[in-house]
Amino acid sequence: MSKKPNQLSNGKQTDSDEKAVAARSSSADHTYTDLELLEIFQDPDRRHYAFNLIVRKHQQKIYYHVRRIVIDHDDANDVVQNTFIKAWNGLDHFKGQSQLYTWLYRIATNESLNHLRKKRTSFFLPLVNVEKQLSESLHEDPLLSADQLQLKLQKAILTLPERQRVVFNMRYYDEMKYEEMAEILGVTTGALKASYHHAVRKIEKYITGN
Amino acid sequence: MEHNYDKDPELPEFANAGKQHPFTVPEGYFERLPDTISDKLQHQKGHRRQPVPRFVLAAACLAIALFLVFHFSHTSEVATTPDFEITPEHLSAAGYVSEIDENMLVEAISADALATPDSSAIQDYLIDQKIDISLIIKEL
Image 1: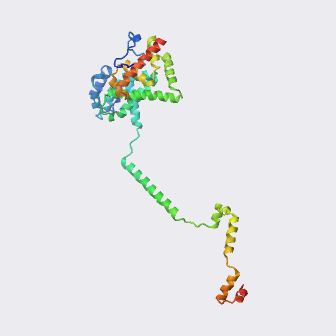
Image 2: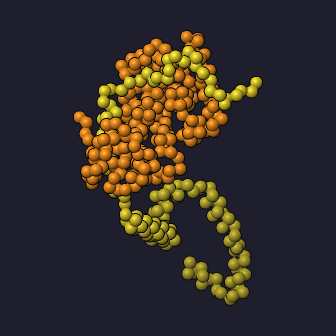
Image 3: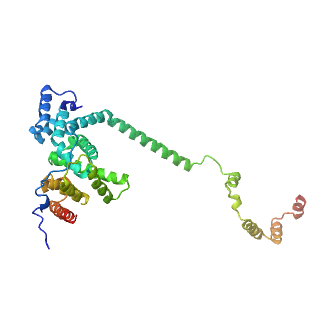
């Protein structure tokens, strides 16, 4: 059952807000800029409404970023929910020094990597086995619409070290700027460029070798 | 050889395939997700512990400090003024007596005996003091 978007509110939302949320949730959530949404969030009576719009605006990008790291949909679902809950808890302290979406990406990336770490420790598996497990799960995943070429690329990506995999995904799929990636991952743009370069070479090698 | 990383390398094999990600989601997932997160936030709000007021924290700190002061002052009092006397029974019960070497005792007694003045010295002392020896013998 899908509730109305205004149910995120604390009950003090105005009628116009409800209509606005309903209208935006159906089509264009992106009417407000992140800055405007953050301003609305500062109003205690409208913070749930603002957060609803933030979730709707960024959920897809965050979800697919997480999904590419953890592969499994259920895991990605858990990680995305935790990401937004952490964002809610930390949004009061968000100073606006970085952009909202890079801040959300940073939380999502850390949550995803922590999730993999927990998975590894709970099953006492070394890194390589988790990646192998993820690679095998690609074949079993009913929520994967990949053709053989895409599947091959995903398997190649899974052979990369964890951080390099994140770098590759952000650059290749999200087409993110190196400056933004540097902000999210806390490394220099030079290191990121080199990492992406090596990742592409490894993927090429894997594909030609298989 | 120096690498130039400024230009991104291509993946020619995938040039025609585009950058479509292969992952799909259950139908209506993104319509439901904000509400799922909303429910979790409401649940979290309901179960969130209230922050402890500052005056309660201050009172707790004061109570701990008073306890520590009382505890340590009491401990030092006990150490300086023992409220019991050490008796031979205590020593015996504690096993100290059993640790005394008998040979050491014999040696100590012999030393005392050697230190005793001889009988001629005693007689000279008695004559000097004009004490009647026969009276002493009679008393003994």
